[in-house]
Length: 98
Image 1 (cartoon, rainbow, N blue to C red):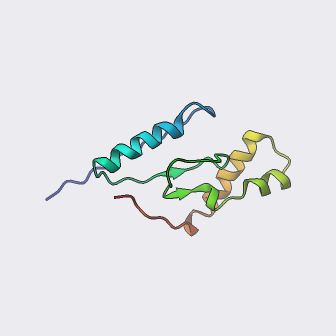
Image 2: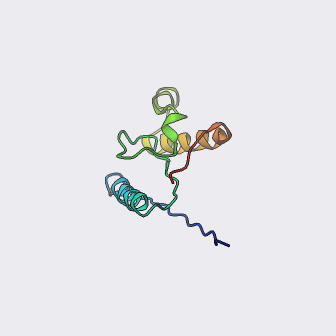
Image 3: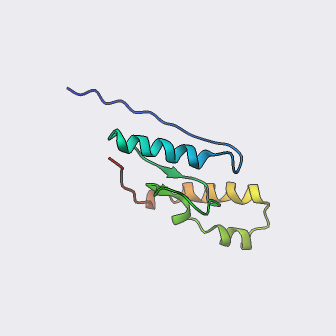
């Protein structure tokens, strides 16, 4: 019997600190080694990703709508987007890299 193990990696940091580059590097290594993995983008303000995430908050949440209709600062806009995303998580469709 094969033993199944799983891990979770979460990267947080300031804008421009290299989170996306690090995730892309790990993603490429996983593909080369044929390691099944799942990528999630929870940054609604990220304009460019060098990979296609399995789940992407930008597919569900409209940051411009939040920006125009709520009187919030930049950090509160992102937190509001994350809160709204959680309320819609059951509507999200995804596929797994393998």
